[in-house]
Image 1 (cartoon, rainbow, N blue to C red):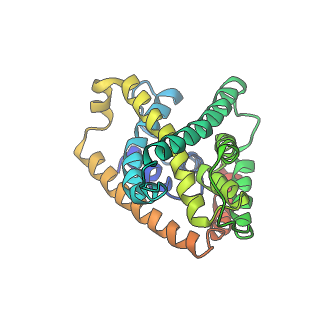
Image 2 (cartoon, rainbow, N blue to C red; image 1 turned 90 degrees about the vertical axis):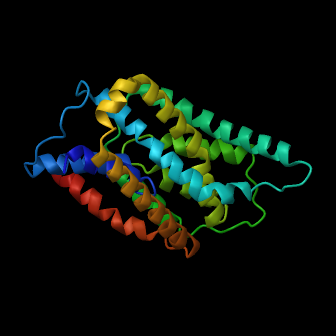
Image 3 (cartoon, rainbow, N blue to C red; image 1 turned 60 degrees about the vertical axis):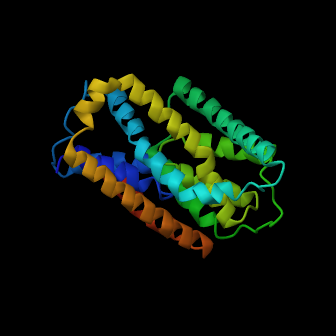
Length: 266
């Protein structure tokens, strides 16, 4: 199968897990090269920027999966009384605050670059973050307020560094704030959704319809993406179970694998 298909499937499926999908794609490509498998075929102009645009377009299927999976949960955050409209506005403003904090980190790292932060260190940070989720207490009365939005937005921004799982790091931050595991799960993806949707729209517009057709509109790749979306949904179901049984820390053990692979292929 075309290596592009494998990378597309991994990108979509691994977004459901707290293990840094982007670092796994990097490790997968390097492992293929290390094993003597041909590099990913040239697409568009073959540049890093072009490949990043393709990855952003692959956020489209992720947006659909997340919207369908969390729709009822996010709607349940609103009390459907006379103030429902203002509750939705309030939630929207808090998500906006979180995402603006994340964007500050995005522009900071765009200016400074990320080469100062090794991928292996980020993988270790992810492992430690996942392990810590086992130990935080729960405050059943904890509210998603402005300070919580800022902290989660900053955590999401820090997770832009190589190897740090966005899901894992923001979930850890939410648990540190004493949100319940279920609420931390919901908030982590709630603040992510607008950003990946914006990245999808921007990259789809930037590539243009002709290039979208050239890269994506093939029956085989479409079938791969549909299968990957089903895999992503199953992944979210699995994560929901592990989170509700306080077993998300299991992934900290799994992180030994990508850290070991990084040591061989860096």
